[in-house]
Image (cartoon, rainbow, N blue to C red):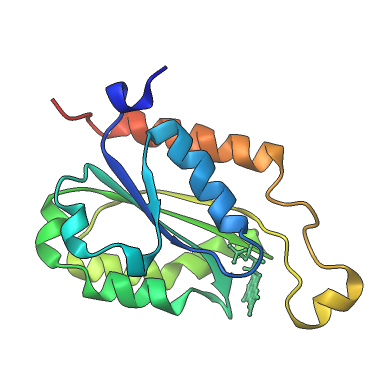
Length: 165
Ligand SMILES: Cc1cc2nc3c(=O)[nH]c(=O)nc-3n(C[C@H](O)[C@H](O)[C@H](O)COP(=O)(O)O)c2cc1C
């Protein structure tokens, strides 16, 4: 299947600084969506001009998505809120708390009037602080199953957003 032929134009903006866990998830989703993967500093807002759906992803650091990503979202022009919906994805040591980890992002997006159409979270290998001494948490995550879930999530996003005419 040629993703570009059937998918909405998607951009994935993400920050992944610990073990590239979130980068793996971003690339799995991008493969389905035919999307570009970029970091916030590589993504001037003008790049969103012909975007049909935007994915925003991050590892979780001290209970929040990466600060650079939050700053980027803070600067996003509100006019875009009418142009495309957004989905959020994170990897973390404790993804069952994703609702909590996603809250700062969702709050900023809601304030600007953006529509969040989906959220994805999975386990990410974590050797933060003392965890390093124990060999870390979530060894080998994201694993094949996590990445398959990420792809299935991306398929649902593609089905929910109309492709360009
Ligand atoms: C400095 C630091 C702080 C972290 N804080 C949290 C946290 O508050 N909650 C959590 O569940 N995981 C936390 N983690 C684990 C990361 O969220 C997890 O390893 C994630 O998959 C990293 O993604 P990345 O490899 O894309 O950077 C932290 C990791 C680091 C390095």
